[in-house]
Image 1 (cartoon, rainbow, N blue to C red):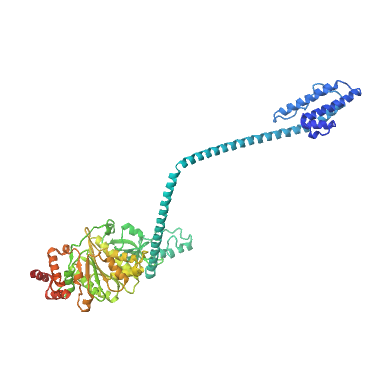
Image 2: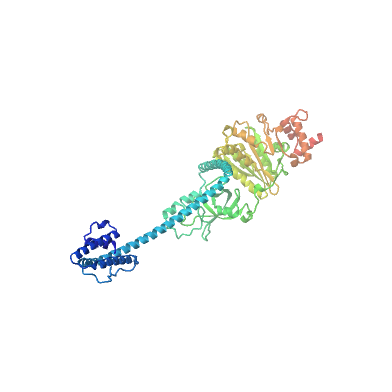
Amino acid sequence: MLLAELKTMAGGLGIKGTSSMKKAQLVEAIKAAQSGGQSGGQSGGGSGGSEPRTERRVRQADKQADKQTEQPVEQPVEQPVEQPVEKQADTPAEKAIDRQERREAPERREGQGRQARQDEQRGEKAQESARQERRQQGQQGQQRDQEQQGRQQGRQQGQGGQQGQQRNQNQQAQADQQRNQNQQNQQNQQNQQNQQNQQNQQNQQNQPAQPDPEQDQQDDGDGDGSRRNRRRRGRDRDRTRTGGRNEPDTTILEDDVLVPTAGILDVLDNYAFVRTSGYLAGVDDVYLSLSMVRKFGLRRGDAVVGQVRQPREGERKEKFNPMVRIDSVNGADPEAGKNRAEFADLTAIHPADRLRLETGHDEPIGRALDIVTPLGKGQRGLLVAPAQAGKTTVLRAVASAITANNPECHVMVVLIDERPEEVTDFQRSVKGEVVASTFDRAPSDHTTVAELAVERAKRLVELGHDVVVLVDGLHRLGRAYNVAGATGGRTLAGGVDAAALTATKRLFGAARNLEDAGSLTILASVLVDSGSAVDELLLQELTGTESLVLRLDGDLAEQQTFPALDLARSGTRHEAVLVGEQEHAILEKLRRGLTGKDGKDGKGTAGLLDRLAKTQTNYELLSTVQRSS
């Protein structure tokens, strides 16, 4: 029997304190109560054979309860709780127990079902607890294995601890050094970027007439990021776009109006222009896309001839007209210039071909220069003179002489920060090309003119031409670079930027005689005794780079002696290669006599001019000197 049934039975027998009794105690109490009842019955005339039957009944009930407890939970409890083997006695106690058991049978069955379900739940909980315990044990085992491996690795790392520490120190030192270098590089890059930004800002301020295609397309054009497209949203989705961002429409339709144009190509950072009005930016310049520049291998300074498309009907007029077709580059087919050699890759040699400056009896400047400083193709010459010494007059005479005696040479006169009337004199007296930037223009215009002119000369030299560039003056170009050029981050004495000297020196150093191409001759004037720190530092930088020096004497100029040549301080390097050994010996003898180096009383420049006046040609003068020896 179950504990609840025994408690109910004990309650029916009048046994008290059953709530705290165990099953065995309840059985004993029930037995004792029944024994007491039977004893009273016997004393009152009851049957004596009821006690053994009652004991067997209790034992049978206990066995039946144990069997029910051992049965599986899944089987329904439908059998009666007790099946007496023998017929029960008709005692009042037994009848009461039977009635009580019959009444409580459904409750006992329901209680047994609940107990079975509770046992099933407890079994499931026990199984779940066991699974969780096994998982925890497995995790603890893995953790112990990892800790053991970590301790083993720690011991292995500990064995090489000193070497690792030393390597770490070396790596740390290298990392510190690398960080310092990176910081310096970043600082230098930032300085260079700031310099470029300043230069671009100055160029934009000083060149109001130069259009900016990138800005134009962003503001008003059909670029992908233009404000016009942002306003129109998706209204132009079906419109065909032939040009990409910052690229004009270069398609040519049957009804398009094409206008021929020509000019010098100026390639900048993000765009290119064909300068149609000279070497400076103008309102009639033509925009050239960088894709066409890359397609034909164009370079800065190329002479480009092409076709410009006029705005179509209903199309908004741009600030610039794009070139849609290139007909020729430097007078040749555009495809032919793709494989031309780079100017910097060509081999430079000493000048060997002479440029004679003697033009006639009444031109003493050219005759004097042929004797004092012979000039050759590819010469790099400096005309050093104080103010009011006649350097501009000398350059004009040299330009006229070269155009007269050497028509195969392309003469370019570059006038920097010059007076407008001087520009007019050069244009009227020199048959060559005159490139000028007058003093009323911005310093950035001076640098642009000089750079583009030299680049144009390089392109001609690459094609095999001989070019002579006369610069007046190089000191003004240095001043312009010092004001408008990109700063180099280092300032010299007098507030002179080192980058200004480098840029001027680079331009002057372009002169050379090339072995497999043409030659570039540069004769530039430099002002001395001006009190300017830029002029003095520039002359110091250029000293030693020249292959010809022509100095003018200010004292002779004050005495109205022209040309006021300083014979003792003028000369040409490797003169024998240029004029020949025999003529070189005669010239040396004449110079020693004029300067007094031969022990006689030399008359200098005045004596040279006197001899030039007495002879008709230099050949006659040199023959006289040769016979006198």
